Structure formats: structure tokens, C-alpha cells
Length: 380
Image (cartoon, rainbow, N blue to C red; front, side, top):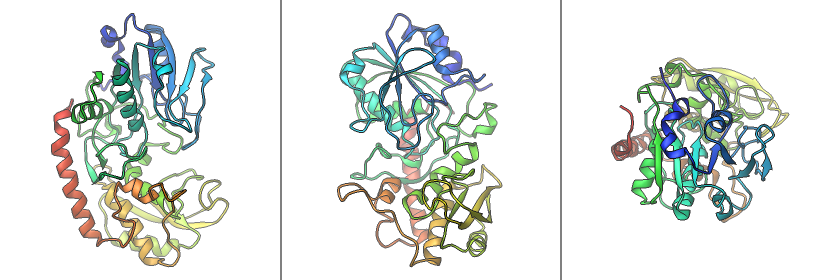
């Protein structure tokens, strides 16, 4: 049986008992029986305050929406936002309320998914304030497989705060151990490990029930697609937001769905098949406009290469529709291009390199990161 840290919380008693505790969590922070982690922890080790990442502690805020301080109606505890307009850090005033911070969020193993950004910032904030941090570790639903390019120096942002590959194959606790050692953060860190999990295990093999870690990741399959297909967010393509199948549907008003489907199936990418898709997003890009494109179907989740598939899809659309396809531009000249933030480099900002050459480069970077990350492993 796979048990996340929260599921054997009593083992963390030496770190929690008698302390003023603050909890950073989200809607995915539940027990194996789907009890809210807030309630499970508060009943054993009374909490002083809650801290919400992007999407909030109950998952009721959209991607990118800032969250202000409020009171949690279920517990009466104050909720302080770690996704504010002016900062994503814990303030000294917040840290004065607690002795120990607990982190319990289900991540999905993609570098630009912002929960690990929050974790890194909290580690730095706790170290500066002399507070302890307890990570209730959770599985990586994508297993320990590592794919994609490395975040390069100068391309850091809140959607890429640490030199990781796009699919980085670590649990939150392992990431915290790696960052604490490599950057000499000095955080007093405790990790309550997962029991029964192995690196080769994808989410369906764990016996756990999927809880949406954010509104646009409704299923495990969505999470597996996300590290590669999310690159579409940096373009004028719809990535399926505003439909029932985000990151499974990719398209735009200028695409011929049947033609793109034929092109993608000709590539014979492992673990995936494509059918023509016709959809009208109710929100986000191309809202209320008829789009054509592809529906991505996973046929073998172990063989599927999310980075190769997502990148190949962009290459195909760019080649087929050179006059219509475009990269999204930043809000102002001082902000990185969205494609630079997601790739962690400028590799797709100008002339795109040969596809096979790019895959070879990213495979080298993945191999180097795998060797580097092994020192932080908690699981075989």
C-alpha cells in the first residue's frame, strides 16, 4: 500500500508536537481516504495559520489569479496568500505566527508547475527566519522518469525557479533536499517520506484516488500530457482551456484538424495516437471561436514521451501554418517571453533548431540532471 506522508502523520510528532504550526496546502492535500489534510492535521496537531499557494488552500482560485488574506470558513483559521500581486514569499509577520511550517501539496512533476516554486521560496524564508520546515512528502504521479531541457541561467521566473529538467522525476521532499544542499539554503528541513512507492510507479499503480491539483489538471492523463503539451500556452494555440479536456485538445481557428491529425500520426510517436478535434473554448484563448486541431490519446503511458510529443506538435503546426502560428509576446519588454519561461531557455525564441538536434540536446541535459539528482533520492 502506498501511503503519502500525511497518511502516517503520527510519525512526524517529534517535529510537530508543542509547536505553533502553519500549513501550506491545496485542495490536493488529502489523506488516502480523501479526508482534507487541513482537518486531519488540525485534529492531531492544532494549527495556527494556513498559507495558500496558487489556486488557494481549497483550490477555488483560477490559474494566475492573485489571492488575498481571508478566513477559512471550515476551521476559522486565517489564510495568508503566498500568491499575492507583490510577492510570493512568506513575510516576517506571517512567520512570527509560527514555529514550524508544514508543506503538504500534491505536485505533478513539471518544472513550471508553481507549487515547487512556492516550496523553494518557503525554504529560503524559513531559513532566514530560523523556522523549521516539515515536508509531508507525496508521490510524483509521473514517476521518476526525467525528460526535457534544463532551466538555463538567466531564465529564472516563478514558473521556473530552479535548474531542473522539464519533467524532473523527484518528489517534493526530494526536490527540497536537493535544493537545500545544492544552494546551501540552510533550512532546518524534515521530510516525512512516502511509504510503498517506487520510482518506476506511475499514478495508476499507486492505488490512490486522483484529486485535481489545480482546475486544469482533472485527470492523471492530463498531468502526463502537461509537461510537453503545456508549451502550447506560449503560443496562439488553444491548449484546451475552456473545454472539458485541457491539454488533450490542441487547436486554433486556422488549423485543418484532419490534416494535422494525419501529420501527427505519421510520426508514429510512442504511446500516443491523434484524432481530429473540433471544439469551441468557452474561455481563455479563442473563446467562443470554433477551433480545429487534434485530440491526443494516450495508448501506453509508460512508453509515452511527453516532451517529444508536445514539441513535435508545435513543430508540425508551425511548419504547416507559418503565416498564422505565432508565439505569445510578454506583457512588457522586461519580462521573459512565455516560451522562454516554459522551455527555460531561448531555444525556441528565434529560429527553431532542427527537431532531432533539439531532442538530442535535451536528452543530454536530462541525463546530466539524472546523475545530479540521484544524491537527493529517498526512493528506489
